[in-house]
Structure formats: C-alpha cells, structure tokens
Figure 1 (spheres, rainbow over the protein chains, first blue to last red):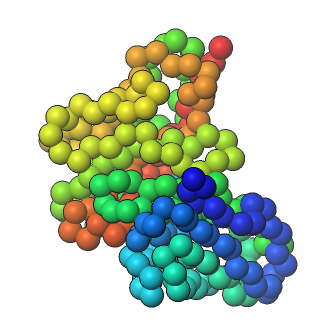
Figure 2 (cartoon, one colour; figure 1 turned 90 degrees about the vertical axis):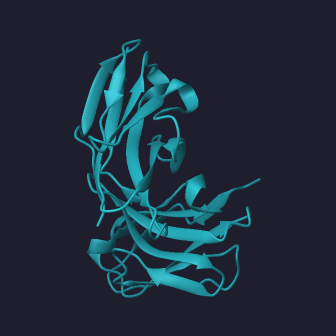
Figure 3 (cartoon, chains in turn green, purple; figure 1 turned 120 degrees about the vertical axis):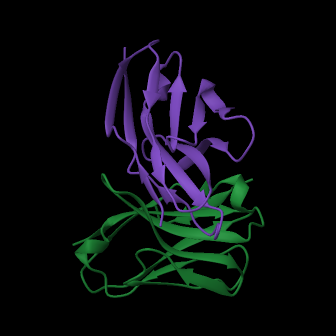
Length: 112
Length: 114
C-alpha cells in the first residue's frame, strides 16, 4: 500500500521555467489537496479537489494550476516559475472530514 | 474565518520530562481539531483528533490532548518524552460549515535533549 506518492523529491528550476509536480494516491480517496510549506509559516492551501473533474482554489493559488482527470492523480502545474515559489510542496488525500489527511513525502523546489 | 495559533515556535525539553505544546484557535463556527507530527524530511502524520465526546483524546506514541471549548484551546501533552519525539508538531482545525480544508498553525519544533 503506497499511500500518497509525490515525484520528484527535489527539483531546481530557473526563473520562467515550468514544471509539473506529480501526486498519486492508491486509497481511492475523493479529496485531494496541494499545500506549500514555508519556514515559520505553516502550511498554506494552494488547490484542492473533492472528486474527479472538480477542483477549487485555496488560499494561495496564484502561479499554479491543477487538474483532476482521475481519482488517483492530482498534478500541480507551475507556469513561469518565480523565486517566491521556492518552497516544499505537499500533496495530501482524505476520504472525508473526520479522517484527517494522508500526506506525501513532499517535493522540495528551488527557483533560481 | 479561522485561525490557529501555536504559541511556542520552539520547545526544548529533557528526555523523560513532560511536555505541553499549546494550541489556540479562533473560529465563528464549530470545528474539528487535529494534531499532526512531521519528522525531518517527511510528510505530516496524524497524531490525534477531537471530533466530539470526551474532551481528552489519546493518540499515537503516548500523546494526548485536551479540548477546552471555553478557552478555545487544544493543547498537546506527553508525560515522558523520548529522543524519537524530536519533530515539528502542527495543530489544525477544520470548520464544520464547509469542511473542505484544514487550517494549520505555524508549528512547534520540539527538541528532546538527552
């Protein structure tokens, strides 16, 4: 049982480049989330999805896009990377409110 | 609107001593409350949660937390810490009116000193 799998684990981007952070879960969870974690700032929600084909913005969506074509996959797209997007990105999934989240191990992104 | 405040950013404690990590929240609606733990270079793991019922909840690794509605607090405690408890701890709430996301505190770094 793999849980939530994120790839890549590390990435360095140049300003203006684009990339996709991959997230896959094998638990058949309907709810999926993308958070970014910055030192001393806790976790901020970027986008979330309540099921295949349904996505919505979180607290800090600017500069990102998502899609949810299947229950399993929830990729996060960065267009025109900026230094402000240097962060650790976590994908999470959940079967519902009361269960809490299952987190992936994170992607550490540096934009230079 | 929701907010979660973790009053201590860093807590050093000697091995086998007790510890309390403080969490206060603000919300205009009822919430569920959670604590997560993050070990170095890993994702967050659920430690314990309060949904309803008894205000004292027990979680994994010997941790417990007490919900105090009047003080809007959900402090995490452990009577005797181990070196392996060194980690970052996050308090989080989920509002019952929407239930679509957690709101996290900024975290407390617990360092257990041998």
